[in-house]
Image (tube, rainbow, N blue to C red; front, side):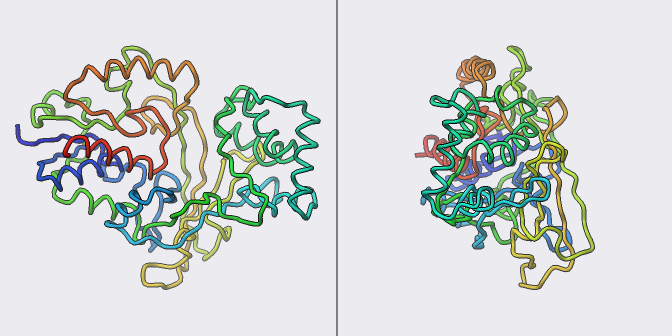
Amino acid sequence: MIYDYLIVGAGLYGAVFAERALAHGKKVLIVDKRSHIGGNVYTENLEGINVHKYGAHIFHTNNTNVWNYINHFATFNRYTNSPVANYNGELYSLPFNMYTFNKMWGVITPKEAKEKIEEQRIAANISNPSNLEEQAISLVGIDIYEKLIKGYTEKQWNRPCKELPAFIIKRLPVRFTFDNNYFNALYQGIPVGGYTRIIEKMIAGADIKLNTDYLTERESLNELANKIVYTGSIDEYFNYSLGVLEYRSVNFETELLDISNYQGNAVINYTDSETPYTRIIEHKWFEFGKDENGNDLLKTIISKEFSSEWKPGVERYYPINNDKNNDLFKAYKELAEKETNVIFGGRLGEYKYYDMDQVIDIALNRANSEFI
Protein backbone atom coordinates (compact mmCIF):
# COMPACT_ATOMS: atom_id res chain seq x y z
CA MET A 1 0.00 0.00 0.00
CA ILE A 2 1.26 3.47 -0.93
CA TYR A 3 -1.19 5.52 1.14
CA ASP A 4 -2.76 5.32 4.57
CA TYR A 5 -5.98 6.94 3.32
CA LEU A 6 -7.69 7.28 -0.01
CA ILE A 7 -10.19 10.14 0.28
CA VAL A 8 -12.95 10.17 -2.32
CA GLY A 9 -14.13 13.74 -2.78
CA ALA A 10 -12.20 16.99 -2.34
CA GLY A 11 -15.06 18.82 -0.67
CA LEU A 12 -15.19 20.14 2.88
CA TYR A 13 -15.54 16.79 4.69
CA GLY A 14 -12.75 15.18 2.69
CA ALA A 15 -10.49 18.21 3.09
CA VAL A 16 -10.92 18.38 6.86
CA PHE A 17 -10.28 14.67 7.24
CA ALA A 18 -7.23 14.96 4.98
CA GLU A 19 -5.86 17.88 6.97
CA ARG A 20 -6.14 15.93 10.23
CA ALA A 21 -4.61 12.82 8.67
CA LEU A 22 -1.69 14.81 7.27
CA ALA A 23 -1.18 16.49 10.63
CA HIS A 24 -0.78 13.02 12.13
CA GLY A 25 1.85 12.04 9.60
CA LYS A 26 -0.40 9.96 7.35
CA LYS A 27 0.03 9.63 3.61
CA VAL A 28 -3.10 10.73 1.76
CA LEU A 29 -4.42 10.45 -1.78
CA ILE A 30 -7.48 12.52 -2.72
CA VAL A 31 -9.50 11.77 -5.85
CA ASP A 32 -12.38 13.79 -7.25
CA LYS A 33 -14.41 13.35 -10.42
CA ARG A 34 -14.63 17.10 -10.92
CA SER A 35 -11.88 19.16 -12.52
CA HIS A 36 -11.33 21.19 -9.34
CA ILE A 37 -11.07 20.81 -5.58
CA GLY A 38 -13.57 22.23 -3.11
CA GLY A 39 -16.74 20.30 -3.85
CA ASN A 40 -19.80 22.51 -3.61
CA VAL A 41 -17.95 25.22 -1.67
CA TYR A 42 -15.68 25.83 -4.67
CA THR A 43 -15.25 29.52 -5.52
CA GLU A 44 -13.81 30.74 -8.81
CA ASN A 45 -12.30 34.20 -9.18
CA LEU A 46 -13.69 35.97 -12.24
CA GLU A 47 -13.08 39.68 -12.91
CA GLY A 48 -11.88 39.99 -9.31
CA ILE A 49 -15.14 38.51 -7.97
CA ASN A 50 -15.16 35.25 -6.00
CA VAL A 51 -18.05 33.40 -7.62
CA HIS A 52 -19.80 30.74 -5.54
CA LYS A 53 -19.98 28.22 -8.37
CA TYR A 54 -22.48 25.88 -6.71
CA GLY A 55 -24.66 28.35 -4.89
CA ALA A 56 -24.21 30.79 -2.04
CA HIS A 57 -22.17 29.56 0.91
CA ILE A 58 -22.23 31.83 3.96
CA PHE A 59 -20.26 30.54 6.90
CA HIS A 60 -22.04 30.77 10.24
CA THR A 61 -21.69 28.83 13.47
CA ASN A 62 -22.17 28.85 17.21
CA ASN A 63 -19.46 26.23 17.59
CA THR A 64 -16.33 27.96 18.92
CA ASN A 65 -14.13 24.93 18.26
CA VAL A 66 -15.17 24.86 14.60
CA TRP A 67 -14.71 28.63 14.28
CA ASN A 68 -11.22 28.47 15.76
CA TYR A 69 -10.33 25.56 13.49
CA ILE A 70 -11.48 27.15 10.23
CA ASN A 71 -9.72 30.40 11.11
CA HIS A 72 -6.39 28.60 10.83
CA PHE A 73 -6.96 28.58 7.08
CA ALA A 74 -8.73 31.87 6.34
CA THR A 75 -9.51 35.38 7.46
CA PHE A 76 -13.25 36.00 7.49
CA ASN A 77 -14.88 39.31 6.70
CA ARG A 78 -17.85 40.71 8.63
CA TYR A 79 -20.52 39.76 6.08
CA THR A 80 -23.99 39.36 7.63
CA ASN A 81 -26.63 37.49 5.68
CA SER A 82 -29.64 39.78 5.19
CA PRO A 83 -31.58 38.47 2.18
CA VAL A 84 -34.54 40.24 0.62
CA ALA A 85 -37.78 38.69 -0.63
CA ASN A 86 -39.25 39.92 -3.92
CA TYR A 87 -42.95 39.13 -4.37
CA ASN A 88 -44.10 40.53 -7.71
CA GLY A 89 -42.05 43.67 -7.13
CA GLU A 90 -42.91 44.05 -3.45
CA LEU A 91 -39.74 43.84 -1.33
CA TYR A 92 -39.73 42.37 2.17
CA SER A 93 -37.05 41.77 4.78
CA LEU A 94 -35.81 38.27 5.49
CA PRO A 95 -35.73 36.86 8.09
CA PHE A 96 -39.33 37.64 8.98
CA ASN A 97 -39.04 40.50 11.44
CA MET A 98 -40.65 43.79 12.39
CA TYR A 99 -39.73 45.32 9.02
CA THR A 100 -41.58 42.45 7.32
CA PHE A 101 -44.62 42.73 9.58
CA ASN A 102 -44.79 46.49 9.17
CA LYS A 103 -44.61 46.24 5.36
CA MET A 104 -47.20 43.45 5.30
CA TRP A 105 -49.74 44.75 7.83
CA GLY A 106 -48.72 48.25 8.90
CA VAL A 107 -48.18 47.11 12.51
CA ILE A 108 -45.74 49.05 14.67
CA THR A 109 -45.15 47.03 17.81
CA PRO A 110 -44.20 43.39 18.47
CA LYS A 111 -47.48 42.99 20.38
CA GLU A 112 -49.48 44.03 17.30
CA ALA A 113 -47.48 41.65 15.08
CA LYS A 114 -48.02 38.70 17.42
CA GLU A 115 -51.72 39.45 17.65
CA LYS A 116 -52.02 39.54 13.85
CA ILE A 117 -50.24 36.19 13.47
CA GLU A 118 -52.37 34.60 16.20
CA GLU A 119 -55.55 35.96 14.61
CA GLN A 120 -54.62 34.35 11.29
CA ARG A 121 -53.57 31.08 12.93
CA ILE A 122 -56.93 30.82 14.66
CA ALA A 123 -58.74 31.70 11.43
CA ALA A 124 -56.92 28.82 9.72
CA ASN A 125 -57.97 26.50 12.58
CA ILE A 126 -54.46 25.14 13.16
CA SER A 127 -53.53 23.66 16.52
CA ASN A 128 -51.11 20.82 15.72
CA PRO A 129 -49.36 21.49 12.39
CA SER A 130 -49.12 18.31 10.32
CA ASN A 131 -47.45 19.66 7.17
CA LEU A 132 -45.32 22.56 5.99
CA GLU A 133 -48.27 24.79 5.10
CA GLU A 134 -49.82 24.46 8.55
CA GLN A 135 -46.47 24.90 10.25
CA ALA A 136 -45.75 28.08 8.29
CA ILE A 137 -49.16 29.61 8.97
CA SER A 138 -48.82 28.84 12.67
CA LEU A 139 -45.47 30.67 12.72
CA VAL A 140 -46.15 33.74 10.56
CA GLY A 141 -49.80 33.81 9.53
CA ILE A 142 -51.63 33.35 6.25
CA ASP A 143 -50.52 36.53 4.45
CA ILE A 144 -46.80 35.96 4.87
CA TYR A 145 -47.20 32.28 4.03
CA GLU A 146 -49.06 33.07 0.81
CA LYS A 147 -46.67 35.81 -0.36
CA LEU A 148 -43.27 34.84 0.97
CA ILE A 149 -43.23 31.08 1.60
CA LYS A 150 -45.66 29.14 -0.58
CA GLY A 151 -44.41 29.98 -4.07
CA TYR A 152 -40.73 29.84 -3.16
CA THR A 153 -41.03 26.53 -1.31
CA GLU A 154 -43.10 24.82 -3.99
CA LYS A 155 -40.59 25.89 -6.65
CA GLN A 156 -37.76 24.59 -4.51
CA TRP A 157 -39.31 21.17 -3.82
CA ASN A 158 -41.72 20.85 -6.79
CA ARG A 159 -44.36 19.60 -4.37
CA PRO A 160 -47.39 21.29 -2.78
CA CYS A 161 -46.64 22.65 0.68
CA LYS A 162 -49.45 20.48 2.04
CA GLU A 163 -47.44 17.42 0.99
CA LEU A 164 -44.16 18.54 2.58
CA PRO A 165 -43.27 17.67 6.18
CA ALA A 166 -43.53 20.35 8.84
CA PHE A 167 -39.94 19.91 10.04
CA ILE A 168 -38.54 21.54 6.87
CA ILE A 169 -39.66 24.94 8.12
CA LYS A 170 -39.48 24.55 11.90
CA ARG A 171 -36.14 26.41 12.02
CA LEU A 172 -37.59 29.36 10.09
CA PRO A 173 -36.29 32.49 11.84
CA VAL A 174 -39.15 34.70 13.06
CA ARG A 175 -38.14 37.76 15.06
CA PHE A 176 -40.19 40.42 16.76
CA THR A 177 -37.28 42.85 16.51
CA PHE A 178 -35.78 44.94 13.70
CA ASP A 179 -32.84 42.53 13.34
CA ASN A 180 -32.08 41.70 9.69
CA ASN A 181 -29.42 39.09 10.51
CA TYR A 182 -30.82 35.86 9.07
CA PHE A 183 -28.62 33.42 10.95
CA ASN A 184 -28.26 35.04 14.37
CA ALA A 185 -25.07 32.99 14.88
CA LEU A 186 -22.20 33.81 17.21
CA TYR A 187 -19.74 33.75 14.29
CA GLN A 188 -20.48 34.64 10.68
CA GLY A 189 -18.67 35.78 7.55
CA ILE A 190 -17.18 35.03 4.16
CA PRO A 191 -13.53 33.93 3.80
CA VAL A 192 -11.39 36.61 2.21
CA GLY A 193 -10.17 35.19 -1.09
CA GLY A 194 -12.90 32.56 -1.33
CA TYR A 195 -13.45 29.02 -0.09
CA THR A 196 -11.13 27.36 -2.60
CA ARG A 197 -8.17 28.94 -0.85
CA ILE A 198 -9.23 27.27 2.41
CA ILE A 199 -9.38 23.84 0.78
CA GLU A 200 -5.98 24.37 -0.87
CA LYS A 201 -4.40 25.04 2.52
CA MET A 202 -6.13 22.09 4.17
CA ILE A 203 -4.99 19.51 1.65
CA ALA A 204 -1.48 20.83 1.04
CA GLY A 205 0.77 17.79 1.31
CA ALA A 206 -1.73 15.28 -0.09
CA ASP A 207 -1.51 13.76 -3.53
CA ILE A 208 -4.50 14.77 -5.66
CA LYS A 209 -6.06 13.23 -8.74
CA LEU A 210 -8.86 15.25 -10.38
CA ASN A 211 -11.13 14.18 -13.23
CA THR A 212 -11.10 10.74 -11.61
CA ASP A 213 -14.30 8.77 -11.01
CA TYR A 214 -13.60 6.54 -8.05
CA LEU A 215 -16.54 4.23 -8.72
CA THR A 216 -15.32 3.34 -12.22
CA GLU A 217 -11.73 2.86 -11.03
CA ARG A 218 -12.51 1.50 -7.59
CA GLU A 219 -10.60 -1.76 -7.88
CA SER A 220 -7.26 -0.22 -8.83
CA LEU A 221 -7.64 2.76 -6.48
CA ASN A 222 -8.51 0.59 -3.48
CA GLU A 223 -5.22 -1.23 -3.89
CA LEU A 224 -3.35 2.00 -3.20
CA ALA A 225 -4.57 2.64 0.37
CA ASN A 226 -5.24 0.91 3.67
CA LYS A 227 -8.50 2.75 4.28
CA ILE A 228 -11.09 4.63 2.24
CA VAL A 229 -12.93 7.83 3.20
CA TYR A 230 -15.92 8.00 0.88
CA THR A 231 -17.92 11.24 0.59
CA GLY A 232 -19.96 10.38 -2.48
CA SER A 233 -23.55 9.19 -2.57
CA ILE A 234 -24.02 6.07 -0.47
CA ASP A 235 -26.58 4.45 -2.80
CA GLU A 236 -24.27 4.91 -5.79
CA TYR A 237 -21.44 3.25 -3.86
CA PHE A 238 -23.59 0.13 -3.63
CA ASN A 239 -24.65 0.38 -7.29
CA TYR A 240 -28.20 1.37 -6.29
CA SER A 241 -28.75 -2.26 -5.27
CA LEU A 242 -31.56 -1.36 -2.84
CA GLY A 243 -33.00 1.54 -4.82
CA VAL A 244 -32.25 5.20 -5.58
CA LEU A 245 -32.21 7.90 -2.91
CA GLU A 246 -34.03 11.04 -4.03
CA TYR A 247 -32.61 14.56 -4.10
CA ARG A 248 -33.46 17.99 -5.33
CA SER A 249 -30.89 19.64 -7.58
CA VAL A 250 -30.16 23.20 -8.67
CA ASN A 251 -29.31 24.63 -12.08
CA PHE A 252 -27.48 27.94 -12.36
CA GLU A 253 -27.54 30.62 -15.04
CA THR A 254 -24.54 32.86 -14.40
CA GLU A 255 -23.96 36.15 -16.21
CA LEU A 256 -21.15 38.70 -16.22
CA LEU A 257 -22.73 42.16 -16.49
CA ASP A 258 -20.97 45.34 -17.52
CA ILE A 259 -22.57 47.33 -14.70
CA SER A 260 -21.41 47.90 -11.14
CA ASN A 261 -24.63 47.02 -9.30
CA TYR A 262 -27.49 44.76 -10.41
CA GLN A 263 -29.68 44.30 -7.33
CA GLY A 264 -27.87 45.94 -4.41
CA ASN A 265 -27.81 42.81 -2.26
CA ALA A 266 -26.05 39.46 -2.30
CA VAL A 267 -29.26 37.41 -2.08
CA ILE A 268 -32.78 38.18 -3.30
CA ASN A 269 -35.42 35.44 -3.15
CA TYR A 270 -38.24 35.45 -5.71
CA THR A 271 -41.21 34.17 -3.75
CA ASP A 272 -43.99 34.33 -6.35
CA SER A 273 -44.86 31.14 -8.22
CA GLU A 274 -44.58 32.70 -11.71
CA THR A 275 -40.87 33.59 -11.64
CA PRO A 276 -39.10 30.37 -12.71
CA TYR A 277 -36.02 30.82 -10.52
CA THR A 278 -35.96 30.78 -6.73
CA ARG A 279 -33.34 33.47 -6.16
CA ILE A 280 -30.61 35.63 -7.68
CA ILE A 281 -27.16 35.80 -6.15
CA GLU A 282 -24.99 38.84 -6.84
CA HIS A 283 -21.63 37.48 -5.79
CA LYS A 284 -19.66 40.70 -5.32
CA TRP A 285 -21.79 41.79 -2.35
CA PHE A 286 -20.52 38.86 -0.26
CA GLU A 287 -17.32 40.93 -0.14
CA PHE A 288 -18.90 44.40 -0.15
CA GLY A 289 -18.36 45.01 -3.86
CA LYS A 290 -14.60 45.27 -3.54
CA ASP A 291 -11.58 43.22 -4.58
CA GLU A 292 -8.94 41.97 -2.15
CA ASN A 293 -7.12 45.31 -2.32
CA GLY A 294 -10.22 47.26 -1.36
CA ASN A 295 -10.88 48.62 -4.86
CA ASP A 296 -14.44 48.99 -6.13
CA LEU A 297 -15.40 46.36 -8.70
CA LEU A 298 -16.80 47.97 -11.85
CA LYS A 299 -18.54 44.84 -13.16
CA THR A 300 -20.82 42.35 -11.49
CA ILE A 301 -21.72 38.66 -11.76
CA ILE A 302 -25.17 37.26 -11.00
CA SER A 303 -26.45 33.69 -10.77
CA LYS A 304 -30.10 32.71 -11.14
CA GLU A 305 -30.98 29.49 -9.33
CA PHE A 306 -33.51 27.05 -10.76
CA SER A 307 -34.60 24.16 -8.57
CA SER A 308 -34.97 20.80 -10.32
CA GLU A 309 -35.52 17.12 -9.67
CA TRP A 310 -32.30 15.18 -9.41
CA LYS A 311 -31.51 12.62 -12.07
CA PRO A 312 -28.33 10.66 -12.81
CA GLY A 313 -25.63 12.84 -14.31
CA VAL A 314 -26.49 16.04 -12.43
CA GLU A 315 -25.34 17.26 -9.03
CA ARG A 316 -27.19 16.24 -5.88
CA TYR A 317 -28.07 19.10 -3.51
CA TYR A 318 -30.91 18.54 -1.06
CA PRO A 319 -31.85 15.08 0.23
CA ILE A 320 -35.59 14.46 0.34
CA ASN A 321 -35.76 13.15 3.89
CA ASN A 322 -39.26 11.70 3.85
CA ASP A 323 -40.07 8.34 5.43
CA LYS A 324 -39.50 6.38 2.22
CA ASN A 325 -36.02 7.80 1.61
CA ASN A 326 -34.99 7.69 5.27
CA ASP A 327 -35.92 4.00 5.45
CA LEU A 328 -33.93 3.33 2.30
CA PHE A 329 -30.93 5.16 3.72
CA LYS A 330 -31.10 3.09 6.90
CA ALA A 331 -30.89 -0.04 4.76
CA TYR A 332 -27.86 1.34 2.94
CA LYS A 333 -26.30 2.34 6.26
CA GLU A 334 -26.53 -1.27 7.39
CA LEU A 335 -24.57 -2.28 4.30
CA ALA A 336 -22.05 0.49 4.93
CA GLU A 337 -21.40 -0.73 8.47
CA LYS A 338 -20.20 -4.04 7.02
CA GLU A 339 -17.52 -2.22 4.97
CA THR A 340 -14.82 -2.44 7.62
CA ASN A 341 -12.21 -0.33 5.84
CA VAL A 342 -14.51 2.40 4.49
CA ILE A 343 -15.63 5.57 6.29
CA PHE A 344 -18.80 7.11 4.84
CA GLY A 345 -19.07 10.83 5.53
CA GLY A 346 -20.58 14.13 4.45
CA ARG A 347 -24.03 15.03 3.21
CA LEU A 348 -24.04 12.44 0.40
CA GLY A 349 -22.45 9.66 2.41
CA GLU A 350 -24.86 10.26 5.29
CA TYR A 351 -27.88 11.39 3.23
CA LYS A 352 -28.37 14.47 5.37
CA TYR A 353 -28.30 18.19 4.67
CA TYR A 354 -25.47 19.76 6.66
CA ASP A 355 -24.42 23.37 7.08
CA MET A 356 -20.70 23.91 6.57
CA ASP A 357 -19.91 24.11 10.27
CA GLN A 358 -21.70 20.81 10.85
CA VAL A 359 -19.66 19.14 8.11
CA ILE A 360 -16.45 20.39 9.71
CA ASP A 361 -17.58 19.24 13.15
CA ILE A 362 -18.47 15.70 12.10
CA ALA A 363 -15.28 15.39 10.03
CA LEU A 364 -13.16 16.54 12.97
CA ASN A 365 -14.91 14.14 15.33
CA ARG A 366 -14.47 11.24 12.92
CA ALA A 367 -10.82 12.08 12.40
CA ASN A 368 -10.24 12.36 16.12
CA SER A 369 -11.67 8.89 16.61
CA GLU A 370 -9.15 7.65 14.05
CA PHE A 371 -6.02 9.37 15.31
CA ILE A 372 -6.44 9.97 19.04
